[in-house]
Amino acid sequence: MRTCPWKCVVLLLAAFFTLSALIYGRYDLDFIYSDGRVIQQRLLTVTDSSLPLYKESGEATTAPPEDEQQVMPCSLRQTVQQDPLLQQRFNFSVPVLQWAGHSSVGEWQRLQLYPPPYGWKGLPWDVVNSTLALLSDPQSSSRLLEHVGPRPCVRCAVVGNGGILRGSGQGGAIDAHHYVFRVNGAVTKGFEEDVGTKTSFYGFTTNTMKNSLISYRAAGFLRVPQGQGIHYIFIPSDMRDYRMLAAAIRGAPVTSGEDRGDLPSTYFGQNPSVHQFKLLHPDFITYVKDRFLKSPLLRMMYGHLYMPSTGALMLMTALHTCDQVSAYGFITDNYKDFSDHYFDMVKKPLVFYANHDMQMESRLWEQLHTRKVLWLFKRPSEE
Ligand SMILES: *[C@@H]1O[C@H](CO)[C@@H](O)[C@H](O)[C@H]1NC(C)=O
Ligand SMILES: *[C@@H]1O[C@H](CO)[C@@H](O)[C@H](O)[C@H]1NC(C)=O
Figure 1: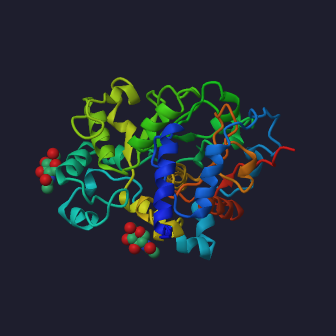
Figure 2: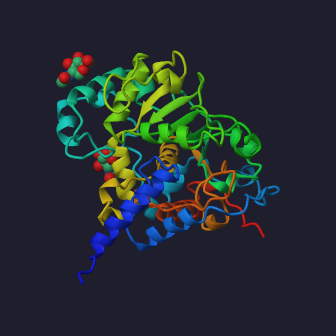
Figure 3: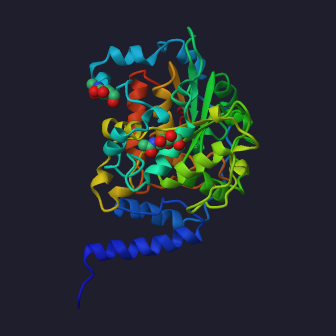
């Protein structure tokens, strides 16, 4: 009898899980599997639908971050400069944002060699150029923080959506930072005590934003954070992001592609200012991947789908923008004791997919925490 070679097994499983993913309401890219381990973990999630209700827990057992941050040096850049290992990794000269200043024939020739999010391959020049042309103010388009002149130690909190935050009581500590970054399904209503209310930056791809609005609606994520003080950080993972961004700045519906007809005001509110829109630079995403998150997944079957997670890109963005960074709701080594998200009504295990390497991200946050480049919120496991 002819046996199924491993490639065929993987394809069959991929087809099975794609179906399951659709049935179980996963609309994102996160359904591709690279190896047995990943498939195994997904299998657990699919079959394990009757886990007990998520247990409400008491206060966080760790000290509030203010205590530790007093001993954290201000300016993580100094910390990096004093550590030869960190110096090899960090390069604060890589541009974080792309804007009109990057629109040139030379840049086009260089960046059209790499597919998004690492470059502009496959994107029509007029889409890239006309989008970047809208980001024309060097003051606001090329920089995240528009503050000029001498500044105090700028403290930023980056809030991931991890279940570790549920029952953590960290809302006040998070809101006490100068700037708060949030991502994707960042529900705050009903979770103020644990995650705070302030949002300065909201990071996403058009795909993850729209998926979050569908998948986490029941959890209360009814709209993207809106208001004058909120800035939107687009991750350019696809042509959709350039088109959505251009439409949002113009205040007009998206005219072509998958999101054709979408009204940007649905997502970003009425009459947002151009200053509220930021676009990550492909070079920055490439740098984050090559220097910090060069995952073995890149060499696997679905390696072309791999990229750092939205949370990882926002945390790295904060590290290249702020003087002090605290990370809340990011994966820790005891992640298995917490639900996938803080807003899950029923405890769901965190699932690993081939398009992100959460284990590698977890090790990176731990290392940066140990070396005092950032402060990572951790909690002991319950019981
Ligand atoms: C840092 O990044 C800049 C801008 O991309 C580049 O010109 C420079 O060579 C990089 N330096 C190092 C040491 O990698
Ligand atoms: C890029 O777009 C700007 C603004 O629309 C236009 O003036 C310029 O000619 C375009 N550049 C190229 C090389 O197409």
